[in-house]
Length: 411
Image 1 (cartoon, rainbow, N blue to C red):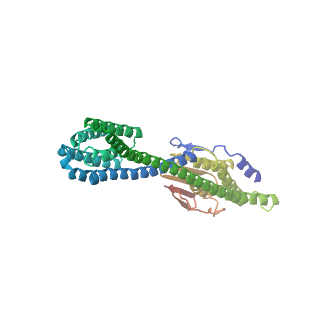
Image 2: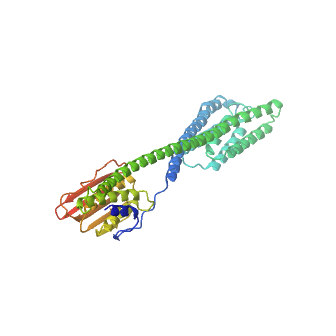
Image 3: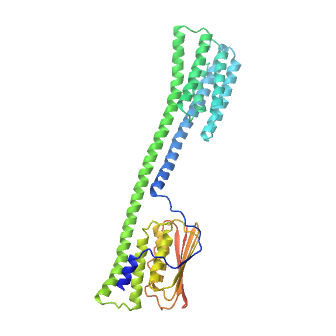
């Protein structure tokens, strides 16, 4: 019997008699590194979007608040100084509507027609400078000085900063043409123009660049943090799996060692059916445990074939029927599906039929054998329902003619 046990452990890959009515094997799931990268990418995208959304809300609020709280009161208070107050107010209303529509689309993450909006804003810019007149050229009534840069930022949000710089440069060129056209070319007027251009351009550029940098930094830090946590979780899972496998190997090895020790000391009779079943069960469990670490497309079928192969090597005719391809299952679930059948297979006499029916969300494994050997010699295996990937149920019946064991996993 010790020779049979040793041979069962050595010959791991001999095929069992099998009839397969199945779809092609399911593909091997992606590596842990790929899963880590994907999870980190999803976290980074979520954090980056949250940061960018906050910046969008701030940009829309600044643009509309400046336009309504500073620009409109200034126009209304200085209408007498404007050359064409109605044109200036109409242009103000057009930009307000553009700002509201742009803000709504930005907050909904809907793409904007950036350059048509930019062209419209530049046309409004030139119109307001012409309609404001010389007396209101450098006053708050000429609202395009302080407001239009923020609306340029809304129109070009998410694009490169050089587009915003180009629009602000065009805005400055329009202002320079207006200043020269009105004859305001004294050193004081030119210095005032330079200060206006600098003050009204630097803030939108700083806010635009700052929001982009903050979003990028948030995304990078989230990626790093998510990858670190995922790697730590994988290490913990690998360590738990290693400890669990070590404990199971010690348990199975101890059972096999006890049988071999009893045979070696003469305390067990190799012809005793009980001793034979104990040896077969120990070898089957050890064989299935070893098969867990094999890199194969269908680990569950591989482990069941290992148990069926051992039974066939011990002279038991066995049919293995598979219907469908099992989905990727964790080791714990595979153990719960296979262990009860392995224990029953060790007691089987005359013949056995092992059936595996698989679907995307369910796997059913059943074993039918004749009920010829009286009460269970080995007893049912210990049953663990500690699965985190779904529930595994077991059914065990016998009627004096057949014994039927079924395990069922549902997602």
